Image (tube, helix red, strand yellow):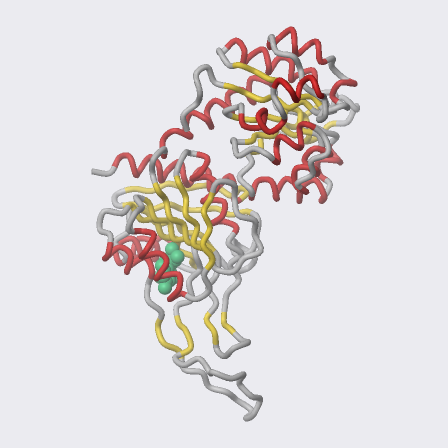
Length: 400
Ligand code: C5P
């Protein structure tokens, strides 16, 4: 990602005692040469005054959505386009909920809805509010949409309790944002294709065979690629997931449709990441009418589906290709065999079955490439995706 010069940060401050840490954060960005525009929610102004930020940033702190003087100078849509990145620190439970729902009932939430810039949130709240299933689900939704979560940390809280929910220290937030924006540059100009989700292989007009893949890992990989500057085309089987910000999504159903679309798009791409759980077989014939209930048993004959990765590899020998290996046994041997058989540049292997990987929110991967490998320990799929894409970017740059 190319930052403007000087880089521009929109710092959202929401209502919580950690709002005082945002003052230090604003100062750090200003010291590092950034232009910083602070937008406060009404509740934030109960904790720290707008004047504090104005003095630190040299720019008038914005708060109201419909303020005619401000709207005349820089309207809220213009303001949403202005920054290179938006950081909300502290991000209250209420703000996370509003972002997850796509509300636009104050200036900050409206800006977040009207922007396509990288968005970072540093949650800060009481430990029970953070642990609440509602907050966790909201945060998971935001991560799936490509929003970067910074913290929270654990420790003593202002309310007197001890636990998870403390805002990261300003320095941690500053370092993480800078590192993310820095690394964002390394896939600039690269077109990546990601296949994701299950396929559906029809039996008749109303029935199909599919698998438990949710598409979550593939969508997270697509979001992580965008975060590093890649142009991303996501070829997706049926899922219930929102399209990550900045991703072009093409919906398909069967393996044959996924292959056709993959071949077409791969011709103009440099990276291809096959996370889809493609059905190995399809019904040899698809009944034109709904199959009727008749005998006690029923026999369906299946034919082998084309292997998408292997076919795309044959068509595009220069493409950097990553495959997934979902295994229930002999993980390393099977993954290495796949690397060679499908002529891949990298294989990401995970254990599946017994509640692992498929349709869950976390994952762990073992990566294999010719002559090497590494491990990504269990974490949220968004975090696993970021680490995987970091390795892909490095291997992609290193290849001859
Ligand atoms: O051979 P296997 O199905 O175990 O390989 C898994 C990897 O191959 C995944 O990356 C998956 O997306 C890809 N695949 C494919 N076409 C198929 C089956 C799997 O591209 N027909």
